[in-house]
Amino acid sequence: MYFQPLVDIRNRNIVGAEALLRWHNPELGNVSPDEFIPIAEQTGLIIPIGQFVIEQAFSASHHWQSHFMSQFKIAINVSPKQFREDKFVDLLTSLLAQYHINPSSVELEVTEGVLLSGDQIINSNLSAINDIGVSISMDDFGTGYSSLSYLRSYPFDTLKVDKSFINDITVDPGDLELVGAAIAMGHGLNLSVVAEGIETEEQYQLLSALKCDYGQGYLFSKPLPKAEFEALLDAQHKPE
Image 1 (cartoon, rainbow, N blue to C red):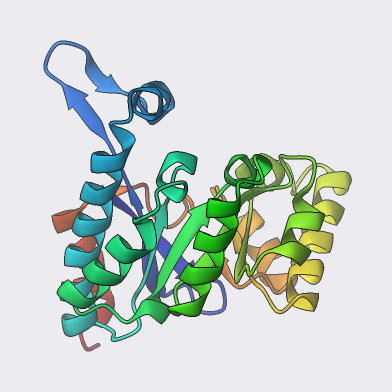
Image 2: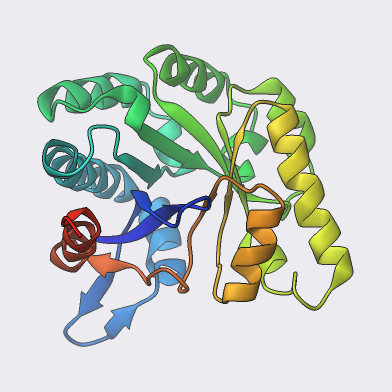
């Protein structure tokens, strides 16, 4: 498990993390999630892998909430196959209790791919997740075709603007307008907005001016192993 900081755009403080899975294979080297996640989906291994990710993320979060900030946010990507599991919400509820995690500090990230099938089990799981107080985030916003209708139809709390739009906001007026419109729309729907892939100070300043809520990206930190991430939190919380 690696963790990428989630930063409050107003003051650049780390307020949470996105939990990310990495695989180093002795023979193949570093295997990209783009390669191994689809295979895990096809074979069904994504179910035990997904449970492992949630357990590791909750274990780390419990420690950070105890030692640094009580409302430390943890974002976890959830696959379509996990969402189709009858027992997914029961598992989530059980792990929240086991690791003493406040549901409001957890955010499950879903892409439009989760919603496209229109399966009733997915609809009921989304409602049940919302009912237990866990937040739901629309990941990669702007890269699909029906995001607007989904935002109205499902109980989302957060909008994540895809890094492909953030990349060129300093040089492409069209992208800047689109990002500004996404932020305004998100706020109009009472959603928090996260900008992904912030790499330069200029991008950060523009997003700050647009009143974006949170950001992630290499400007703040690449994804880090737990111990290195904790060192960042430690440095942030040491008295001046």
